[in-house]
Length: 422
Image 1 (tube, rainbow, N blue to C red):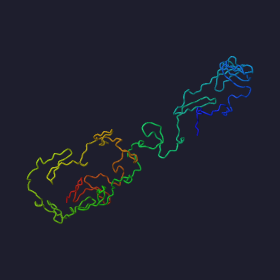
Image 2: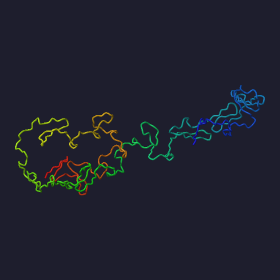
Image 3: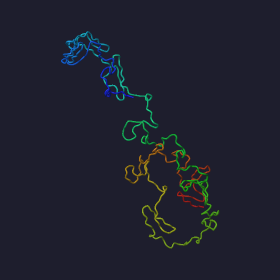
């Protein structure tokens, strides 16, 4: 549990003797005959208390003295008063040497260029001979294979990554956050995509299955529901609508002739030629024309409409369906939206989507590129919202919703207005 410590960390309890440290191979060991060894300048040699055998090293004159019991006797010197050498032999890897005078011993140069080998990304690799000399050196890049690395145990779903907020910091093991996941295009999801509404968990789409002869009608809860056309008419699985009654009254099976109209005869609707007496207050000519003052001055966003029932003009708000509008051409990938930044409201313009337009999505972390059609998702059990102009969906003989044109006795335009043609 105790790591390697610097000597300065040992603040208390340090011994003051070799024995206290358990040292048995000290460099200087008194084997007998020398009471003590002292060092200092020559003038500081003790002048009393003579103890035979003690030694004194004079540091300024480089002389060695021995106490003979009554005085100091010089027994050695590194100057002119010292002894002479007998022989200095240059060993392996050395040159020079000699038997007298000032002898020089040289260490031969090796083939290694002086310098620093190794840094934060490299480790030094050296070759040492028997004399301890470095004979070769190089810096080797530090490469640690994964097989040599032992990783600490981590909790599930943690990965080694940089900080999950702005700024730089050392990587740590942490959970993924939204910012780690790049925006992906739908095409990047190449496998595992469901092919059904249920597979995607979609609950607000209509299945493509529809019983033979039925049509989809929104019920009281606003849900498209398959029903069979009944009441005044019937509908085949080819979209042919036959009118059997009008307001619950049967229609004569005899087809009207040219110029005739259906007239209620008290029991059923039958073909009949209209007479003047059939129309209330019908006049053979107009007594007056519409006066200019009968027109209305409408405001912005209104249109003037003539009401034939009340014989008056009125101003009504303009309301156009998307199918009635033609939009100006725009560059690809632009949307009609408010400002893309800031907190001040502004008029919408055509612009490209920005990240702030797209809310954070939990599903598969796909924040862009999601299809907007059933075919884009590869869904095969749902009915597309695309429907040719004026057509309706009717379940065919194999119980599949099929687009057909309403025909027969009744036609219907793209706004849902049905017209009895026969």
